[in-house]
Amino acid sequence: MAGYAKVSSKGQITLSAGVRKRLNIKPGMYLSVVADEEGVYLIPLKESISQLKGVVAVDGSQNFKQVRQKTMEEVVGENAKSD
Image 1 (cartoon, rainbow, N blue to C red):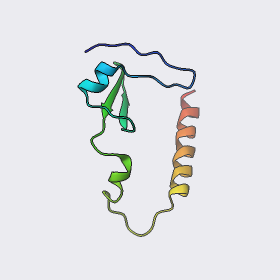
Image 2 (cartoon, rainbow, N blue to C red):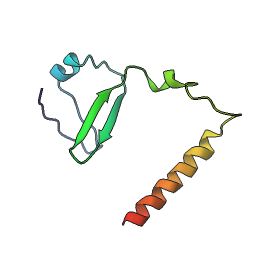
Image 3 (spheres, rainbow, N blue to C red):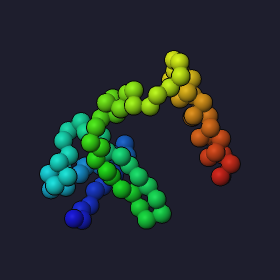
Image 4 (cartoon, rainbow, N blue to C red):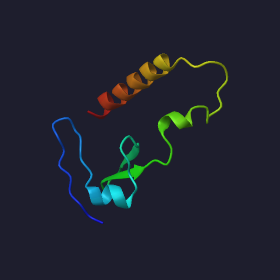
């Protein structure tokens, strides 16, 4: 099934009704966005992100603000190296 989508100024796209119906994509669902050398793939997730809470066991409490900040710094550093 082929289709076209135009990217908005906000980086958003709209999936056609036929694609949404065929893949049973409902409003509010999450899609995994996978990019590789061939292109970009959108894969409907069977569960929402919030349903994954607790799937991975961790030792002790987590400071997610700190983890997010560290990850962002690492990504920025990697991007700076590749420029």
